[in-house]
Image (cartoon, rainbow, N blue to C red; front, top):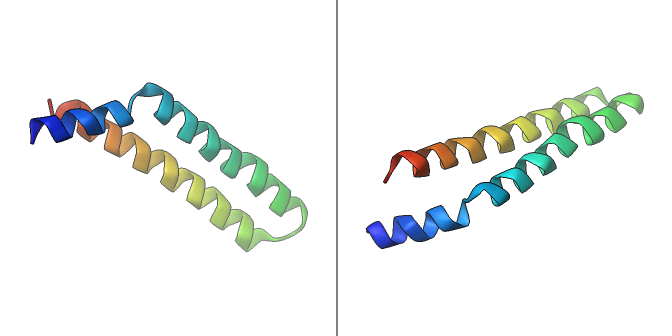
Length: 69
């Protein structure tokens, strides 16, 4: 079991988390802003929510793996 946790931790190291957060910020601001300019409020809100779900999910999994040592 410990070996599996160590392999999962190696996947979720800092660079992967950084990459996912950058993609999420792009979804929140760039895609949401573009959709708001086109007066598509519902789609813009969904893009923003999706970006925040990505960020919270990645950070949550990272914290769980950090505390399972």
